[in-house]
Length: 262
Image 1 (cartoon, helix red, strand yellow):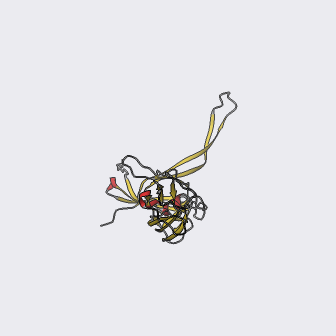
Image 2: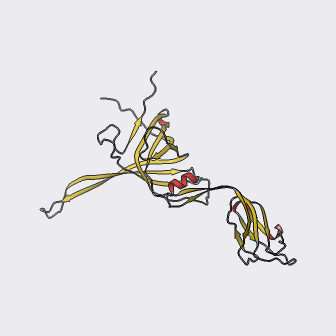
Image 3: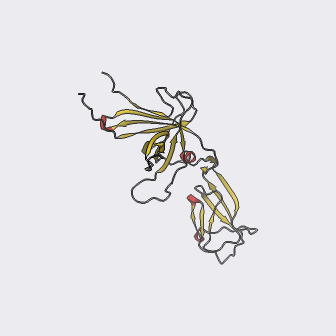
């Protein structure tokens, strides 16, 4: 009797993707830190119950199809990844200067004003609208410059200031992601891992045609000791350009790589 060799799996590794339909071996992008990657399948069945015994016993059950699903938890959170997972587009905002930006008219003590270009603001100056503009002293407001937010704490009694107030400032560049303004795109997905339980044996898993759903949640405010992660569900679809009976299959493949021969 042959001896069964125990083989266990504890995986770590990198996840890559590129647009579905890509040709050649290039164009892959690394997803960064992915702390969870799971793959599974479900079976859709049909059945029939007989009608001759009075028991309506099930006499046939057979598969009529299946579905493959992928779940990921990714920790690389940047505009490119958010655009990918939220079906959005990126706009590059150039650094620049702003002069004469009008505040709402009127503003009162306690009001909070958001600047039009709230990107790491610097050199902020607030003036009034008089013929000889008067500068509002910084003691009268709190400025949260990194977000372009201003809270009015007080107003001078003398000299009286003429509203509307105006702001002049410099602003840094930024990258802006618009949510859900692009069509969903199919991708190819590839996992390059190692099995820690078996001397770091290398493995590869590939899925040829993957449809991802938008990210399930993005925790903007965190608590505890865990870093924010985004959860993503995906479906593995059949790639009809591949032969059904070929060695690579139509959905994907798992490759256990042998050790280097001495």
